Amino acid sequence: MPNSTAHLKTKSKVIRFPIAEDGTVVGYSDDGTFLNTIAVYWDPSGAVHALPRLHDWAMRATAVNNLGLIVGTAYQPAAAGSVGHAWIFDKATGVLAELPGAIDGSGALPHAINDAGEIVGSVIVNSWHRAVRWSAGTHELTLLPLLQSESRYSEATDINASGTIVGTHGSVPVVWPVGAAPIPLPTGRCTRGLATFDTNAAVAINDAGMVAGTLMGYDGCTGPSKPVPPPPTPQFPPSHAVRWNTAHELEQLGDANSVATALNALGVTVGYDRLGAQRWP
Image (cartoon, rainbow, N blue to C red):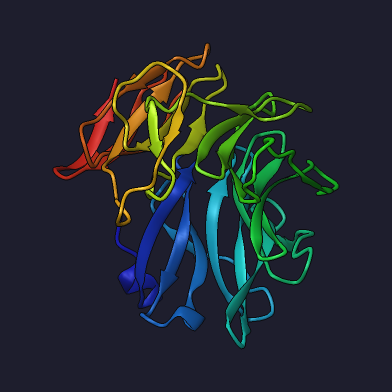
């Protein structure tokens, strides 16, 4: 892919879930200054295009569907950093519109959009991320249900053609079937230290229902997770790239310190580890 430096006089980055079937890629470009960050897309020829600005704020594009709808976040400057505002851009019309969000004025972050135009991500509610879905067309905002647990954190990271959503609740990877409560995915870890940093994430789902993600502290266990006494000091267990099949059975893909980022219709999964980019068939 051509570097956009000469065109925009900036450095550019491509981020998660950024490519459509026709080769359109989305991301952002900056000059090293966050306030000057602009959302961009590369068309199939490799030419780069800057999106309109929302209130002249810094912007990043995070996802695109096969109909040319792009979503992302604009960052309103605030006293304690910035407030995220979700937006959608239509390549066909050139119109950029703000999505409903910021329930308590703290921000909204879209992560994925399917070809029906349904969008998922998170909004800030009482200082916690909550997984949400924006409906197609009307962009009505709906909070996704939580697991019956003490955690108030949840985040939706991807949605497939049927509307099934994946993401994270607390430190548990989950699937939200259409109109139903979240289903926790197995984590392959029988002992879970209450004070360890064992955040797990389901990051992508294909139309067949296969899910890719990353687990912290994976130990190959097939039994239920059991909390254990916290260690004397916080621990950072290694990450492992994993995949769940349509029956939610867990498969380890990478060795320690691997991360899965996406999968295709056949379940082929990509990510990276200590050696660089990886592809797991």
